[in-house]
Image (cartoon, rainbow, N blue to C red; front, side, top):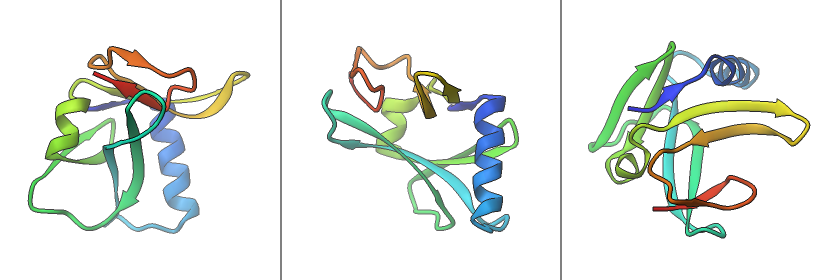
Length: 108
């Protein structure tokens, strides 16, 4: 499962409202090859479920993850940071053995 902090929920709700997405949309979380550590996080809004997607909800946020990405993301917390060191979504991934300085890529 992927958990969502209150700050991430607030920001996701704001972005969905700003984009005028209805209740058919959800947050798609994934992993793709790339970045300075080998794997990069993907975060987007979507409304199309695929056959092998895993669907769950945390803190009132519907999350969808493809099966392959889920193996890398199980136990991850999605947070949002708006501090002096930068603003954006942050993945706290217990499976990552190494992350890059910007926090947008990782390796296992």
